[in-house]
Structures are given as structure tokens and as C-alpha cells.
Image 1: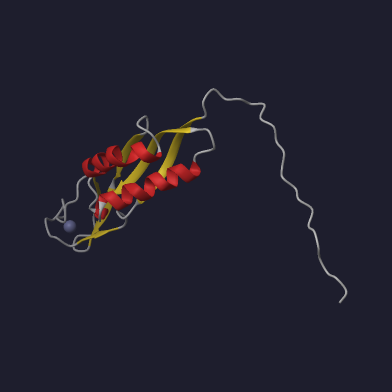
Image 2: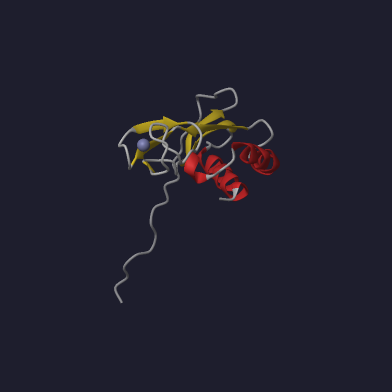
Length: 135
Ligand SMILES: [Zn+2]
């Protein structure tokens, strides 16, 4: 996994999700342990990439998703916060992971800049011109 392209995608997604005139304040991202993505590396690239797109006020909050595993040998299941291929119960390395490939933008914190609530709604309706001419 390349953190730079992941962060690029997240920033693009946040930019598209942000309402016009709003400022993205924070991105909450959930990352599974099996992605191999480093939160530190993400933070590094985020700081480098945010300036041109979201602005320097934007924060990246990465939450590591607990990894659920089942042991194929003893049948016990466990939840871990660090990737470990060894079963904590019997010590063999026959863990099967139930999750871990999450990489989601969970929520977006947006500052809409003082909340002008009386914005004019005028849908641009253009009557269709032309049409079927008897020929
Ligand atoms: Zn086991």
C-alpha cells in the first residue's frame, strides 16, 4: 500500500463531499491492520498534500480498527490492536483474520463559515427547446 496515493484519494473524496464555501476541518479515517498502512506515513503525506486542496486547517485523524482473528488450531477468537500472526491462546501461527482491510473515510468535519441559513434557492430550470419537427 502506498500511503501517498491513499491520502490523495481521501483528500479528493473530502473535497467532493465538502459543501461549497465550506472548509474541511477534519477527516476521520478508519484503517484496518492488514492494510499495512502506517498512520504516521499518512499524517506525513496529509500535511504535504492538504495545502493545495483542503487547506492547512484540515486535520487527519486515523483510527486503527481492532483486528478480529480466529485460531484455526484451538478455535479461540481474539481481538488485537497490533498485527500478530501468533495465537495468544495456543501459540501457533494459524490465525484467520475476519477483518483488517478497512480503509474508509468514516466522517468529515466541515466548517461552513458562519452558517448563512438564508441562502437563495433558485434551481436553474431551462425549458427544453426544439424537439420533434415534422420533416
Ligand atoms: Zn490457537
